[in-house]
Image 1 (tube, helix red, strand yellow):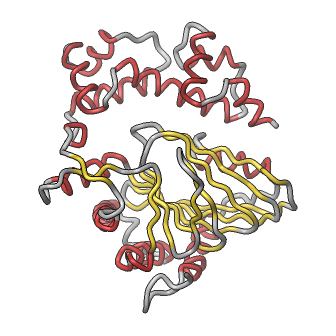
Image 2 (tube, helix red, strand yellow):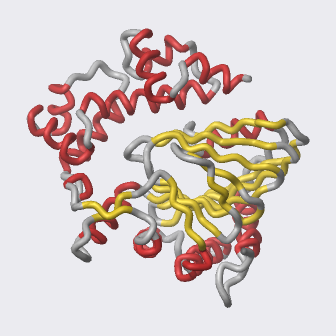
Length: 345
């Protein structure tokens, strides 16, 4: 499955455009597994762990990132003779990810069976939870991360275009780019534009429109892959007080917060706040706060430069180490100590 469609260059040809981005970015070249782990943690803001599953000669890792509107376009390249794996944790409000292998296949799993993603196909990851991917040998990968707000707005537009309701994403969706030629051509146009010195898509206004078009093409491609459900209020545009509340929680997550303080920070009553979180997020404000605290804690533990586990617990707002450990294991399936041991081991 080398060519994605008649008249469209093989996805392997996209490597040249992506390599130009890498050269222009001038980022550091990682030459061992430890340096690669740190580089991937940095690029993913602490959400992605890299590890060697079957040791082998490690040659290099390089990566580059560009912005298109609110989207992040990343090119990652491994040259390694062993088998390696990444684990990425996603919360409900994280972006949608589109992974397109350009050289070398990989396997992916979230909650079901492993699936193979080869050049000429694309993997869509949208659901919350842990996603694992594993490779063997050299690999080049194009990642496109799409803002969650943009996705919600596009899903809303799709929902009102017909009587069937909104799209409900499965954990992982595999797209055959041979059958999604317009989507593939649009992705190719974006990366070839980013290769140029005067990229049009780097302009914010143009980039936001490109993001909107890419999402509409992606949603139309996925229509046959996803389940139809009745329109649910959580897919409607979130009101301003919810945005204020979420921003307040993210900025003050380390403080001693209760429902009253969060409501005060968002400018509404506690009752309205409770109602809004149930309606639009399917969770309570305090449950959202817990998820944000645990997400920051995981980033700190994986960073390798934070203090003790107790210090991390206190920094993210916990007053009980035992409660922190229970919540952490319930969310990530391992203890804080195990996370730190994985990072250092």
